[in-house]
Image (cartoon, rainbow over all chains, first blue to last red):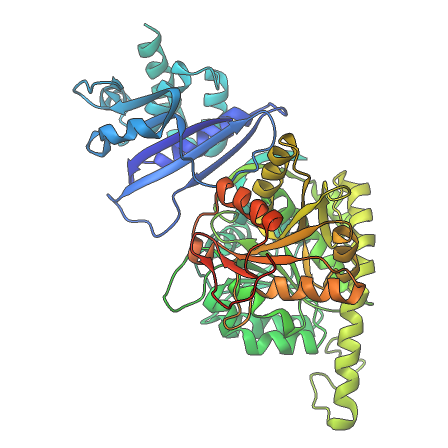
Length: 171
Length: 393
């Protein structure tokens, strides 16, 4: 099973990214199974939020919160702490949206890409980064999830952001 | 048929849309809110032609559903936790009046201390209210139960309301792939509700009346018989469901690798998947573990539980419930089933997940170890025995 832990603040769309990733992984693929869920409880704008995506080639039966992840995606660099390294599986990676490099992480300026598309958050940018650094989902699957689960008027901007983020990583 | 990536609440709402209730009356409460929000959006966009009644409380929500059902309408409501407890008076009116209402309950902790997270103390406290109670494990089963529950409730042999329970958050708020059947399939499976148990100006009758000591008893006997008849109707309903939708369910309970199991963990709801996965791991180590997931708490699968456990050396019951001063209610029920069948094996009760506390794979492995080695009768996961001084060890 592959596990992605998303860290963000209320309003940044961490759970939306977790959900889109699960939808993408299972899009047009009957042999793929996914669970996506937020850290449960009251929602407050600005408060730290955790969200989870679990991916497997058999039904995912373990609904408990991920303890060790293959990818930890940090949407807000003030939420990064070196202690997060202990929550990685062996060979796992931490991806941080930040303008300044952070040791032992893949740092990416998601806001630059989001600004290109007038997006207020970097959630789909970071989804694009994870999709490029992993082989879990294809660009077509990411686009299909955005088109299936985001309001129509913001689909084009978000698919654009995903594609640009993937290109930036692949360069 | 289409596939969508949906939460348990959203999947359930899709099932309700397919069942075409005439009336929906509900009051929002976390973690049930999304199901009524989705249904209200469906009514708004015209894809569901129901009368949606916004009420001022849960007591009114179920009262409305009772009134609607008494006029011959198919009525739906949904609630959780304190909302269910606020409905408690009306639960008995609905079942006593033999009104086949369907309700979704998002299983959630009860106050105090106040807490919005999942456990099963709300619904299990209402086992005696005369409602059929079924517990879903995943979003697909939730959607499918939304359809099947109407057919069971409305069967004239049963005429009993159904409460479909979804674990709060772990099931209601978790997204997974769900197959949504076609409306034509749903229509073939679930015909419109037709009943004589309704207000009818052409055929006036007394409804929801008083009954004194001479006849009251008979009504209670008949309600009990109606609930027992649901056992057979559940099987028939699942057969018809499998034929139309191609998915088969296993009746009142779901047994996993119990045939040759030495140690069996009995549980209910969404934690069952992790229990099965743990049993598989233990089998790789040579420990013959099995799992029973109770689907229906009422009517209770007495004979089925005894049959599943009769060859085991010991069993445990994992539940998100405690009846203070005794033990978990599911454990009480399971013990009664074994006693009646003459099955004499040691059993242990594991109380977990209260107020939403996580139950890990490690916790479940420890339960199997405790079942094997013996422990106190009543154990609180992560804390220990209840200190009642009783042990089967």
